[in-house]
Length: 162
Image 1 (cartoon, rainbow, N blue to C red):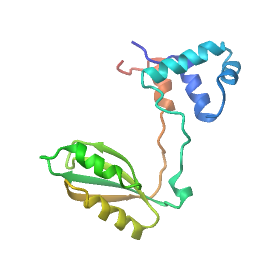
Image 2: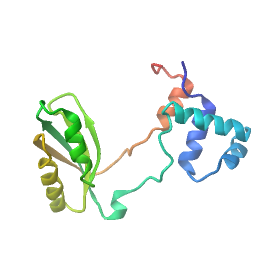
Image 3: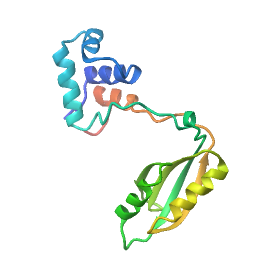
Image 4: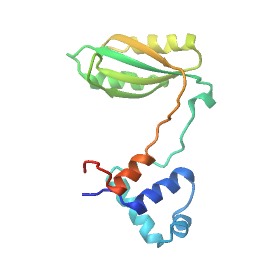
C-alpha cells in the first residue's frame, strides 16, 4: 500500500519551504480544495508520516557550535529505557538511538566548545547504566537531515518496500 502520493509530496515540500503557510493558502498554491489539504494533513499525521509542525532549530545559532556523536556501551541488565531516561535530562543530548554493532546506543550531542563537550560527555558517562562512551566530533555537515527525497521516492513508488 502506498502511503504517499504526488500531492502528499507536494504538500510536504510546500510545508518544508514555508512552514507557516496556512491550509487555505496551501490549497490555493496546490490547486486543490481546502478540505483536500486538511484531509491529507490529517491522514499523514494519523499514519505518523508528519510528526510535527514545530520550528527547526539550529543549535549553532544558540551558541552550540560543536556537534558530536557518542556511542555508548551500557550494562545490559538494566536495559535501554533507564539509560534513555537519564540521557533525556541532559539538554545537549539531541537524540538517542539503540544500535547494532560495537555499541548499544548512539547519541547526537552538541556543546558550546570542544572543552564544553568534555562536560557533556562527563554528564553522559555519569548516567546510571552507561559503561563506556566513544565520541567523534562532526567537522562539517555536507548533507543535513532531510526527508523530502524520501517522500518524493515513496510517492513515486521508486522501488521502496511498502
